[in-house]
Picture (cartoon, rainbow, N blue to C red):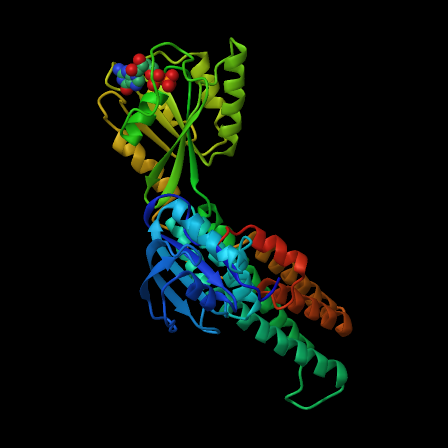
Length: 452
Ligand code: GDP
């Protein structure tokens, strides 16, 4: 229900230095008075106080309370943050007190939704809040932060103003088509301004498309024939023994995932069982899983045993992964080389690296190659407009409407062109949320976490 007082943890569950609870709504201040010894709450003035159980008078914690007076808060309502010590039982106790005294649990994204509904931010900014929390790389973090402070909204505003001007000129033209004065509006002028608007919209979409691969964490998969040294290399990459290795082929039946923080992109390295023909049902299941993980990954690290003559299996994995972005690794280079490197150099690949998981040779180079794949030095410098597929889909429809408008003008159907311009305007308003339905808002905010 709109306007009631909501509360939720704003920090993830677990132990830590602090846990924060947020309360928003008309009763926030009075609730804090009820459960603490605070006498006076002043806008943006932090107070150290005791949280006290209203009935038993037990001291629950010593906490920092940070009040915000409406409308100068995140939600536009009275809002209080309570900074407790970081203990999940403590957070639950204080939340329980708040719920018993009139607050209700916030739904996912409800704080941000209130901020949107009270006009503090537009929908584009609200969605960028969720993107900041979910970002899997520094590139995407920067992009979303720029959208949050309004860069995207500015670009859209500019586009909409120009669109409005074009629409007004078109309406004038429709009403006074016979106007012969030198300053009279010509169809071709209107048409070219519509087309330049269309390219502005397309450029904004393009920016999203260029960067969206940085949105979620990069997935790297180590794959290759059994015993090539995949598990050993994974251990060498993460720097500790994460996977048990063995000279016996087919020991890795399941796959394990490890997070590598490589140059700002969190990379999930997945060690998979070798893609050889399965001999047992367990192995078959393992290989099925491996193939699924392979398909979901962005980059393959194809590990080959350099100390072994290349055979059918090696040729098969090289062929099978030909169409994928891959780094080919010749492992066990501490042993005599039995491969013709020339042959490998002719194969399609992002990089070819020689390593030894035993001596550590080349492991640094491999790590660097992975980092560079996910964080190239030439990250495109794009205009920030969109951070979500939803926004791009609407923008693409708007570009389509603009294209049709230009075509109608070409064919002399000014009325139809005007209708398309109105449609483009409506679509752009949907992006920022000036027009929205309950259903759309529910879907968007359901993707947020509780306490956001
Ligand atoms: P996987 O089946 O591809 O995961 O291979 P493992 O990592 O289990 O390694 C298979 C065997 O090769 C183990 O006995 C490892 O100690 C050995 N091994 C792995 N990497 C190297 C390496 O770079 N040099 C040498 N000499 N042996 C290696």
